[in-house]
Image (tube, rainbow, N blue to C red; front, side, top):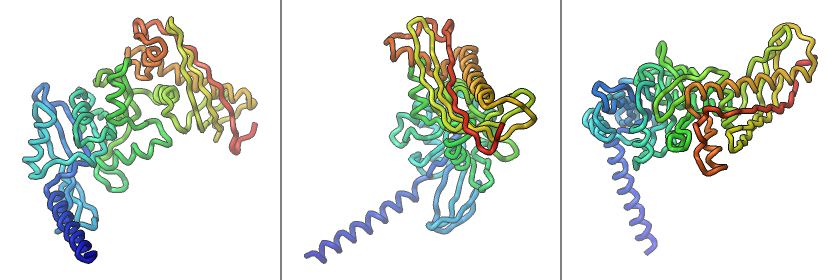
Amino acid sequence: MKKLLCCLLAALFICASCSMGEEIDTLGIVVGAAFDKPVNPGDINMTACILRVSGSGGGSSVGTGASSGGAKEYMVVNSEAPSFYEAQSRLMLKVERRPFWGHNNIIIAARDVNLKPIIEAFYNGYEKRGSEFVVIAKDNAAAALNSANFMGNVGAVSVSEVLTMTGQNGYITDVNVHELFSKMNARSRAAYVPYGQTANGNFDFLGMCVLRDYVFLSPLSGDETIGAMIVLGDYKSGGISVPLTGAVAGAELLETSCSVGCSKDKVFDIRVKASYSVQDVNGETDENNDEVAGRVDDRIKMMIESAIQKSKDLNADFMGFSDDYFKKYACDMPGGLAGATFNVTVDGKLMFKGIEY
């Protein structure tokens, strides 16, 4: 009886495996999607980088790589339609496979594209996970799918790899569909996302940029980006240049934390704790340790204040101060950021590595 049961289970497993294999053969696995300005206003102009695995190997319009099941074949296909799902259906007619979005990791949109219907489709779609990275392209978004990094991966893969690596260090931080949807539906209705461009066949990150109501407003400078990241708790570690008397210090921010308090009359107290080390000094200076620490604290404060000023200039609360206000007082902040006062305090700890004064 046991032998019979084992045979039946084995037969079921083999049948299920064959069925699953046949289903995979009918899928076009999307590994990246790009959205550009449509020819017809209101349409969705979508380009997808699609992977299929064929047991017989074969070539690729984008690139190939070894696989235990055969060769990896990538195809970059474009379609335009009045809705996301019709554009997806038109993709299926071109590749003769049903697009499968469960493994997609990246969404790249040109800065002149309204992201609202796109992000909502990914957020609500049954195959979407909400964990896809969102990136804004300065120019043509579809060009990023044909780019490559030094590892030779197709653009859709290399861009998401770079975003994954920058989580520990750098001037950019990843933002996914779920996070962007939440920010666009919060009181602030603003957020920052990674920003880049395709040049000489490579996709280069330029930093972060600001969106309000799913629409691109402006890129952020390096100082504005770091200031915002510190306030939002997104900054892990990285290097900054700090002016000294007669010299410039290279400082590494090892750890930062920020707390935000606010009063009913829109006075915000931003308190930052930071630890940092001085890695090098370009020039001669006679400043002592306390003076150097004060210079680093002032530099951090200046970066945060520059980010706040940018949010006021754009009328885009991408650091979420209006959300902090609502959580405390259960009402909208009157007049938004206009007329709000920000007091920034930095409490830093200087740690030296190989530098003595």
